[in-house]
Length: 61
Image (cartoon, rainbow, N blue to C red; front, side):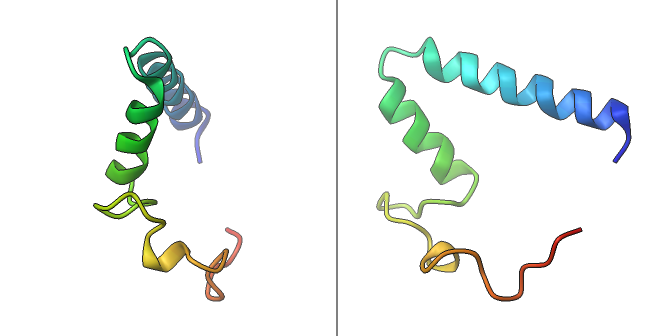
C-alpha cells in the first residue's frame, strides 16, 4: 500500500467520521454506514459472514 493511498483512506475515514458526528442523529448515521459497508444487514443485525467473529478463512496480508 502506498503512502498516497494510506493518506487518501485516512482522509476518507476522517470525513465520514465528521459527517456522522455532525449529523442530527449520529447513532442512526452510524447504523446506516455499517449497512452500507456490509457489516449489518438490511434489518440492522450483524451480517451472516460476521456472526461468530472473524471468518476462519481470513488471512493477514
